[in-house]
Image (tube, rainbow, N blue to C red; front, side, top):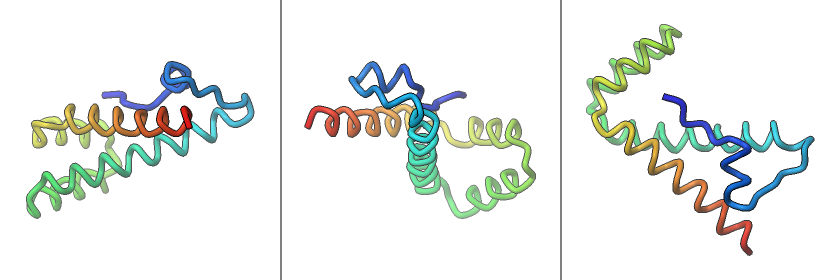
Length: 97
């Protein structure tokens, strides 16, 4: 599941970062998005599930982690979509100010 914010996403809400800032801007935004998704996911898991997820994450196998998350977090797509929409909405609000 790819949920990264792209330059096209920014342009669609009226944000056009300068060429030399695109990579840094997207990296910062996607780090923020990942942090927010992580918070929501950890709040949705039991302590046991959180321990399991951390074990899989520490293995370094991103495919296994994605599979585990898909199997154990039924609302994963909603969490990702909601957090992405919220962040883009916040950016659009700031851009219009």
